[in-house]
Image (cartoon, rainbow, N blue to C red; front, side, top):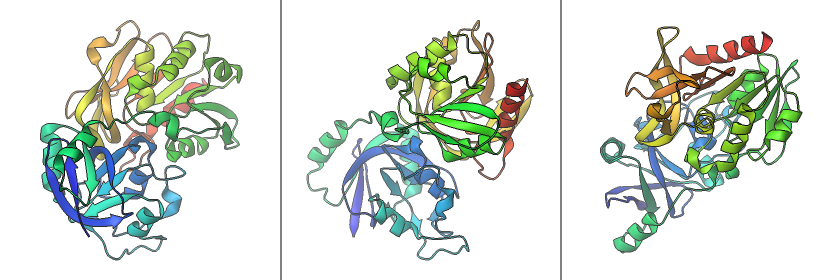
Length: 356
């Protein structure tokens, strides 16, 4: 079935339906990964977004449900150049098309993803609508204009407190849309992780006597999370002595809680091959990233934190080391395994900080 992606600037991209048949409006972003599409589909940070896969062939190794990053997929739509008709992988349990249909996620194949990605790079991230009928373009553009991604952290966060692992190190993980492999990475290192909903109060968190706290990744504009920012500020100003690790959105929220500002990147960083320099180590690591916002370096108080990591492509802040507290936050994903596992050392160093 012929269908269309209409962008808010009026550009139209044609393709054929895959997945669930329904009209949808979303924020359209692109990801440069060659593999890991199931992990992308189930990453809560993509809530409210339609993902353009820049690699031309998607689905050739199928889906292995054990690799999911959360309990369900969160993407709003998916756009690919070619969807493999048949998967070839001994671990595969399901074809992408069946997965999309079951989870009511619409998509398009046959899209000129190279051109679409160039449009997003030149014009910045845009909202768009996937639809079969473009006869009334003015009405479609008006619907797109009125669409806003909101309350996504509350949507993806855990609704209850639960524990994972049986280790001796007690970790409190404040869940803004945590990827499963963050939890797995801690459990493998001997931690017992208590996952806390995003609206958990600082009083409740501090009363549990955790050895350390992790602020997870998550979707949306960090400045929308006023309650979480206040909670993190109260933790920062408390007598809590344990280390704190912030990842992606958690990195941004800690920055906001200590007086820094964030801004929206033109088209974000989404992919597995972003070079980041750790200034203290004087070494560049290849990282996996998924974010559309960054901390404004000019607003970071030098008496509170210093830039510890920097993106080698555009110079943006990729990490902050705090001077008055044992806090280290990173914009990239140390739990991800895009091929290299360069940045997994961050968890090792986190555990060493706890033990000390």
